[in-house]
Image 1 (cartoon, rainbow, N blue to C red):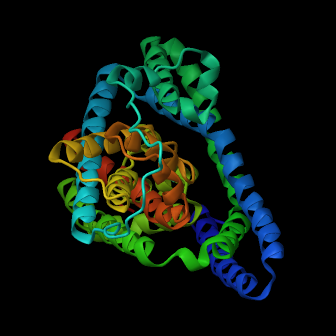
Image 2: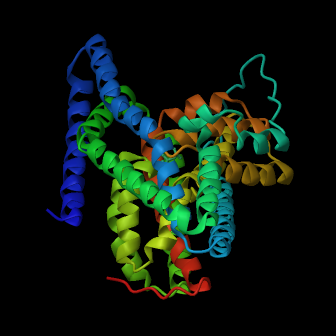
Length: 410
Ligand code: ASP
């Protein structure tokens, strides 16, 4: 069976899991007694969590080997430097734009206005971590931190340095590069194996969501999701169309090739798990392996436009819920913190809401906001992950032109 057909079948299985999970969860929530519902909800959540745990285990190795293999295979260190500088600039600029949309959505839709929650009694705005703290958190102190999801940024940096070291070895390094490439293939294959479990995990999470939160999905949350989905989709259709067109690819081809990773990201809520499918899409767009091999694994962790937008909008929402007025200074802080927060977010389900604590603390907003946002996280995470992975490909196509690559879409 071809890989493309495999991805389609998987998507169908995941979609069926999702719909059946929602229906099943809804039926449980209206027919069974409360106690039984709680027990069932716990079990379903555990079935979903198994998937997340499997992903967490493979992420450091997947990121490490895909980046080290790609950087060590590029012919010259100079070319590698050019790719890295260009892609990082484009990643940061698009994330800042997305964070700006988040703030705009917060102003226009005002999803948390007039709810009037009381800030916790002994509430004092937390002290934000300093710029030095944030910078140093990208460079962990021990080698073993490379094996944790929290050490992802360090893993990326280490993998790039290792790749450069191998390139500098010249002919002697070629063998190492081949081994790294083999190991990276094994990690990608590992993800594909884990994906066989995805339909069950998606079914279980959907059922859990309905049992646990079905009725609360209304009102302020509904408005929040409307604001988030509208602006996120606008970013996807308008900004990415412009980027790929400037990169020399027709937007129609881009959206067509991107549809599979989009849906896999939407349902699995993990950029890391979607990486192999995003790479296949890049191939279909005609991007050369040596380029997307570097930009996509880095983008899976670093470039999260959907998350930046969500974190900025969530900060506005939390301020509105608690009736806290924001000055223009606060708003610029929100944009800055959302860009840094999205870079530091792990490519796993719910990673962006965990990192929301950082954004709220920088602006001095109540950290209770994290708990409030967790309620709708599975729904908010779906669209932001889909856009996170799509942005990686749009930015890659865009920079391909400046690096002199000619795209040959399949
Ligand atoms: N789930 C997202 C991703 O993997 C991260 C997030 O939670 O925002 O891209």
